[in-house]
Length: 440
Image (cartoon, rainbow, N blue to C red; front, side, top):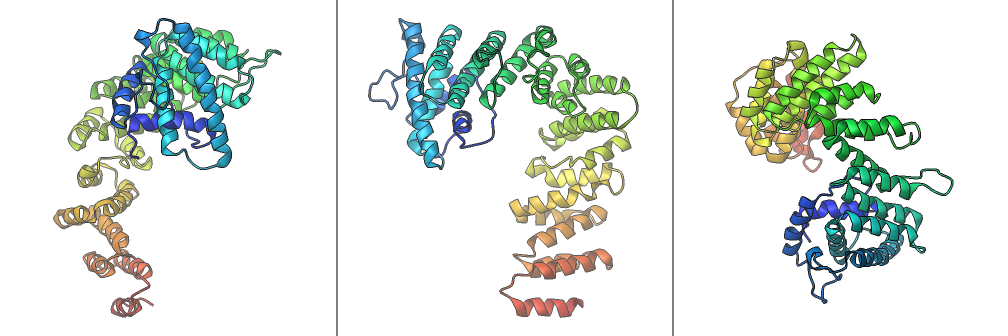
């Protein structure tokens, strides 16, 4: 079954709890529920159905007369399903199609609960006697991440209460930690000072909660609305230079990037000279410029030009693998731009990488671009990468391209690399190629 992105995210959220995927990235919002319902219907999955023939009994929140009873029903059904998931985990392997549909439906039910119902759901999970503790915490974590969207402070408090044992020791891991991070990030987005005050008051008591990832999530959430404050929080929360990337990535439009760039420069000016300042500068400039490339060549190159990066800073972009996420249709334009704007020698790492991957994806488009590209250092670098990439499939064509390079070391090395990549099923042609080009 081809699963849409939104549904796949929800499946990963629950599937990760049972060892089917180690990646824990969760999306829990009311908008997600609406999108989920529309996309699930495409696969014959009803999230808001009264049809008793559905795989899982589902109800519409607006039609329920007893919300408390409905929350308990959802919790009980979830517990039964969790046991099924535990049994499936013991057998190994990914969930089958029927299980994927059930996961999708259960996530829809969870997203349909309001704040009061989610608290009841959590209480039911805490009281359930016959599920594994890890499963219990994971299910509680999913519910609290749902609550965090609209009530992050309540979600945070509920998670701590649910994860503290009789001795007062806080035990969280996996989804539980993600729930705490989500709650603090959501809270910081709408009330940064309130979230910061909570951290100040509870940071020492719950030291294990405030990981570097959690703090970076808070700062990134603040950055979407107030990049200046986000940079101030780096010092307040004791974060390192890598937090700068999260702030820069929160800027999604040219105007937001420009505002964040100004705030970044002010932040850099406040730092002493040294490795930490250089790292923060590289992280921030790289993330801002990389975000610009995602809008396409015209808009991206225009913003970078307006940013006023110095030659040294442009060189830093090259050092960070700047254009590795540029849109494929713009690859040739970006390669030419790099050759014209990066300091001499700085593009030598990125261009071969880009040409190699472009050739793998669409060798005809890459070859067509090479034919039309003016002679010069950029073309020579690109020809080498192109020839060495196609050598394992079209060695004769690769050799013809190599011979367009100026005589010398680069051409000789390219010919040797083509020879070594030559398909083993054509030894006669390989030997003839070696003799023709004096390869021993």
